Structures are given as structure tokens and as C-alpha cells.
Image 1 (cartoon, rainbow, N blue to C red):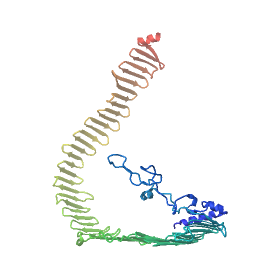
Image 2: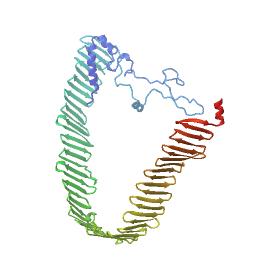
Image 3: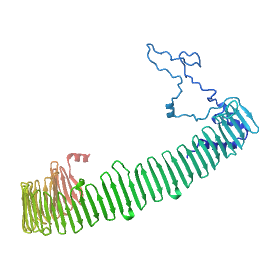
Image 4: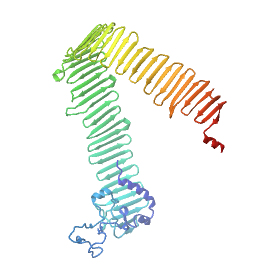
Length: 598
């Protein structure tokens, strides 16, 4: 509920009354003998008796005096009659449209009163000037009045009087606002056509096309031109409504409306809804969770769905469905309303039958039969036969669970396969052929690859890239373009390609060669050989671990006994010997000798 301006003034006067003890003080408070809320006579603001005169600011062409108004537009400042922009008569005037955007400091109070000040001190202090009057009996009574007749002091239709009695009772009478406030229990306020009455927790408000009634905190009720509200917190009840919708909550019951769309429920027992569409798209539903029940209707597709526990019933223009999950399922077509003539029934796990213009299907334990205009399929544990594409393909099997006879043909692609298990299987097509017996097998893709298999685990494959022979799981030999492999598990492995070669004779022989950088590392028993390509030739070394080592490079050679207990190293013209692992230089280039001599 909006608090009126009169209420704020009542609180201000209540605090002000304690400080108004002397008439002189009161006079000073109200601008030296007049003015009041709208400003005293000393404020010098515009009044009804002396309206504000709009003057043009700045020098004017042809001005005869300071107060003279310009009589017409000033002559053009430029020769030739060129158009010029003239300054407005009142440059400080603000258009109404701009004033609404930028705001104003005008507070709506009347201007200060003007005229001769009259004072009297008995039976109370009073001062009057123009349409202004103040009466004061501090701290018991304070009255402030504007809009009186300036000559007689009588009330007029514009009189605005407000008073504070006993610092608790505030009263105001004016054309637009009336108030009677006995602080803090009683409030009666009229703001134009808005009437408010408050008595403790009871509040009532009346205005055109609306009202409010409150008994806080028990009841709150009100209405507006297009709706209203009702709240009762202790009763767990709330309701609001307007022209676009409404919402009501009473304990576990709720109802929510948006235009024609309504949802309601009594939680957690039942829920329902209806969108109220009148243009052919209406939808309705209801749900009863304790009974595992749900129902839905859709007008746009003329469908409905009902679920009651395991029972499911659905209907639309093309078919009807009735199920008792998970045992019984039934579908019936509606050819009279756009559907197809079809029927499907399942009694799980014993029986299923379905028929339609395009196919028929029968399923029994151990038997399946499916027929379409272009295909016929029958499957049993002992014999199965299927044709598709108007007999272009044919599949026949005797004993699918334990296959004995297999025949498959496709005349469109020239494919044929025959199997008499476990003795023979063969197939042929434009892409290749297959032959398989218990002891021998041949698999060929024309001009691509050919593979032979011999009992029990020997395979040989040859293709456009190379060949491969395997005796699983011990021997694997083959070549594929630039790479080859040889494996005699678990003692010998050899893999070679353009980048290098790896050979392992487990556990005594290991050789790793990398052709990209010319390195070779070889371990045979307790010997180690290493080789690498260096500028000018090859750097190699041989170790008979741990007794003897020897190596050469393009600039010299070296040898060691027991890793340097005794040894010799020659690098160009520099020679060193080792004794007890300590190197001793025995010869060096001449430049090094001259440097050592100096």
C-alpha cells in the first residue's frame, strides 16, 4: 500500500513540535512570518500576484533598454538575404518533452506568500500574510494553512490546512489530500480518489475500480480493474488473478491458468490439465499416481493414450493399440481413416502373428515365417529357407543350430556357395573363390591375393606386395615390398626394412643396424661390436669383455687390456699409452712440442 505524502508530513511535524517553544522561533522557522511549506515571504520566489517575467538573455539588436522586449526578428547579419538562426525569446525555457526526460527540481509546493504580515499572541500565537496563516500553541497545537482569501482570511476552494495536536494527532484538509492520523494506531488518508483507512492491523483502501482489505498477518484481499488477490498464510491459501491468468493454492490443491490453458492438482493424489485451445489443437491430461493411472488426449492428431498399471491403450486415426505389459501386445489398423489394413498380436513368449498388405509374420517357439511381396523366410531349428528380391537370392540351411547343409545363391551378382559340414565348403563370385575341407583350404581374391591353409596350422599367402608362410605359433617368414621378417619362436627374430635391421638369436646374439645414420650394435656372448659412420670413414670397436678391446677410426686406432690397465691410443700424430688406467702422451705434433718447450 503506497504511503501518502501526508503521512510523511505528519511524522515531520511530530518531531518539529518539540522545538517550537517561542513565537519568534516559530516565525524564524517559517521564513520570518510567512511562507510555511511553500516558502515564506522572504524567499522571493514567483507568486500569483507577481508572475515571473521571461526575459531574453544577452544583448539584443536594436534594444532600447534593459527591460524592453524585442519587437520582431532582428535583421539578417549577412548581406544578400541569407537565412540566419534567431535566438529564442527565452533561451532558458525548457520544452515539456525535454523536461520529462531530464527532470526538474520543482517540488510542487506553492510559492511563498506576499503581503503585509499580521501577528497576534492571544489566545494563541497567529501570523498571517496573504493566503498564508500559522497558529501555534507549543507543544500542544500547530496549524499551517495556505490558500486563504488574502483580504478576509476566509477559507476558499483552494485552502490547504494541516495541523498537529498533542504531537500525536495530525490532520490535513486540502482539495487533493485529506488526512486524519492518530499516531501510530489510526490512519485515514484521502489522496484524490484514493481512500486509505488503517486501524492497527486492519487496513482498508478504496479507489476507482479497485480496493484492498488487510487483517495482517491473517488475511489479505484486494481487487483491481482486471483482477485481484486473496492471501491467508495461516490457512496455506493464496490466490491471484487477472485477465491473462490466475493461480490458486489451498494446501495441497493448486490451480494455474494462463489464458485458456489450465493445470490443476491435489498433490500427490491427482493432477490434470487442459490447454483450452478452440482452433483444433486442444490437449487434455490427468494423472493419478497412487493408481498408476495416466490419460492424455490430443485433438490435432486425434490421438489418446491411457495407462492403468500394466495396461496401455492408445488410439490414433491410423491404428489402435492395447497392451498388457510385458505379456500381451495387440495392434489393429484403421484403413477407413487413413491407416493400413494390419493386425499384430503377441502373447509372449508363446506366440506372435502379424499381417499387413506388405508382409506376414508368424513366430512360434522354434519356428519363424516371414513373407513379403519379394521375400520368403522360414527358420526352424532343423531347416531354414529364405528368398529375397523375387528369388534372385536363395538361402537354404539344414540344421541351423548344428549346420549340416548350407546353400546360398545370388543370381544378380553371380554368387554361389555350398556347404556340407563338416566335410566341404566352397563359394565363387566374380571377385574370387573359396575352398575349405577339414585338411586343406584355398582362399582367392582374383588378381589381389591367394591364401592356402593346410592342417593343422600351416598357412601360405601371396599377394601383389609379397608373400608370407606361417606355421603357427612357431615359424613366421615373409616379405612385403621392401620389408621382410623371419621368426623362429622363441629363439630367433629378424626384421628388416629400408631403415634398418634387427636380429635377435636369444639369448646369445643381438644385432641392431640403422641405415639412416650408419650405426651397428652387435652383442655375441661376451663380445660387443659397435660401428658408426663418421666424416672420412668408419669408426668401429670390438670388445672381448672384460679382457681386451680394440678400435679404429679414420685418424688412428687404440687398444686396451682390462678397460685400460694397459693400452695404447694413436690419433693422428698423437700417441698415448695407458699404465694402470693412467694416460701418458709419448708423441705429439710439432706445434704441441714447441708450445710445451716454451
